[in-house]
Amino acid sequence: MKIRLVGMVLVLAIVLTSCVPPAMQQKNYSNREQQIMRVNNREEPSSLHPGKAASPADFWPVDHLMEGLMKRTPDGKLVPGMARDYRMSPDHRTYTFTLKEGLKWSNGDPITAGDFEYAWKYALNPATGAQYAYQLYYLQGGRAYNTTKETDPVKKKKLEDKVGVKALDEYTLEVVLETPTAFFLDLCSFFTYYPVNRKVQEEFRSWDKHSRTYVSNGPFKLVQWNHKQDMVMVKNENYYDKDSVKLKEIHWYMVGDENTSMQMYRAGQIDLVYPIPNELIPLMKNKKDPELHIVPDLSIYYYDINIRKKPFNNVKIRKALSMAINRQELVEDVAQGGQKPAYGIVPPGIPETEDGKRDFQAFSGSLFQEDVKEAKKLLAEGLKEEKLAKLPTFNLLYNTSTIHKIIAEAIQEMWRKNLGVDCNLQNVEQQVKMERMRKGEYQLVRDGWLGDYIDPMTFIELFTSESTQNFSGWNNEEFDKFTRYAQSSINQEMRMKAMHQAEQIIMDHMPILPIYFYTKSYALKSRVGGVFNIVNRYPMMMYAEIQ
Image (tube, rainbow, N blue to C red; front, side, top):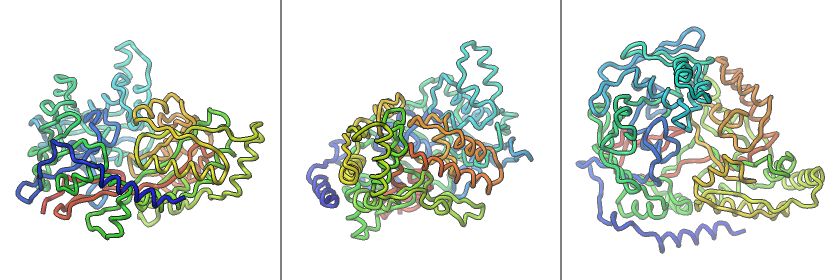
């Protein structure tokens, strides 16, 4: 199969068919005096509310507008953000944060501990419908409040009052956890844990949808939002660390087509383009283009298998499909962005030991092997157990994207060639795909996950029986047991051991097909300095500077 030839044909198609939107035809080259940076955001954000943000199109801008109690420095170190300091109780369940003095929202309102309490409880309120509310389940009473079906307002308020977050005064926030949580401080740098200006939200219910009502506490503030077109952020003069912010403005363009955004980049109309059209990466690598950046990404590309649909309830059939995929060929000849074949669910980039010298994924190694001969044997055994002469033609669902399409086509051909099975490919828009996943209306479906925090648990917990992100229908009591232990233990060595055991269990049962661990490939103009990368974030521009 000539996958490389397909890629070259697509490159030619990009050159011949891509065009820049008429509204962007003017040349707006960023210069040192202007200190204006321009970037593509691909999609219109569904919400810039930290409690409602749910996709990269939301959280990338939000990370430049908002800040939590903790934050990551350019070298990846976790340090206090809005917090001045914190204390932890001897039992590791109670944290007392003290805010920096003089903090202000972009509109001049004081930032208080109450803004954090209000924001966290708002996200947990079941009426909010926050997709990431489960990340607040580590708070005492968080799960009970978020999952209640209680309609009586008095009884519901009692559940809210039991949630383990309380502003003791303007500057002091007390947080009580259900159990000790080793990665809780990292969670405090995650967008669901950002504060909300209560006064603004109660006055303007849709404050997060319009620039005229939007308030922020981070390095930038929103001053313009032309929906489905562009956004403009300017430096927030009320930000406590404003002197470290060199940019005056960031302009975000909602350009969904990767080829069009690359054309804009080539024309000098944007300074950072992410992602790069997949077919251009090898060309830029071969040219040793200094503007190409390929950096680690704490994320995994995989297929969910709906084990509620026969014959995929049979583990041998699931394993056969996994073992018949040549992942090295996929990353080298299809993805071509330096990705790493995945033989587990936890990506590289998470330290296992406190000194950071041992990587969790490297220590795990390969938890299964590719073997076409063994795959054929397992498939035959599984079909016999299911009383089938042949695996019926099945459907693989993926969301519309060139890279998803060519990967699906390559795997489709591998299954045909190696196992003699047929697979139909179906592509739909992302929201349609997600709805079908939630309803279980699929057989196999493309999926992926970017780590919310830098700990193996952000991947392990996806597949527990209680997880809202576990779309396969698989559950395992022993897996849940190891996961619960690792969630609550403060013994780093023992919790890492438990997560290794949990990861092996899921690979032994194969309810998902790991494909590869992502990298981030983006192009950045050489005139721009100070952009930095955190392994579980998109490129960060708060300290960027036009040089």
